[in-house]
Length: 210
Image (cartoon, rainbow, N blue to C red; front, side, top):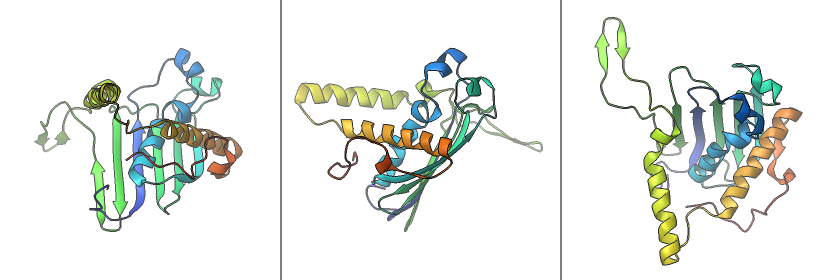
């Protein structure tokens, strides 16, 4: 995407589904699916689009366990994002995918598309007359994103030791939080929400992380 190989981003599609729901004690203090879970996808959407979000429309429901409703939350949600550069984003989240941790992304652009699929413990696949079989995706985020944690720690240490800029700044965190707040507002009010309706740091003079 950064090199322009797929042209201008038109559609960003992100799927994030956990292998099982968190305990009730966690749900009670999590901040809700948009602030706790989908906020990482808001980060990813800004990064992949290279643009700021202008409008958010969210829908959610309790389809897995009533404990989420007891704490004013949902366990299944879809959000559409409108970006300043004209691109459109779609994010779907679920607190339970019975087949394992499901993390996929696609950027469709004017010259092609780029996708990232699930990681699996191995590449073995068994084919028989009954169908195709393979292992479930890596269990959860610690396994799936182990290398990412290693790299971000190394970059953080480098920034401290050599006084180099970090690639993710405070503005990135603020904007993801503003999108999460807008998503919650949208779901509760049943309407699209403009990011300008959410108080916070002005985005006019800020840049998206490279």
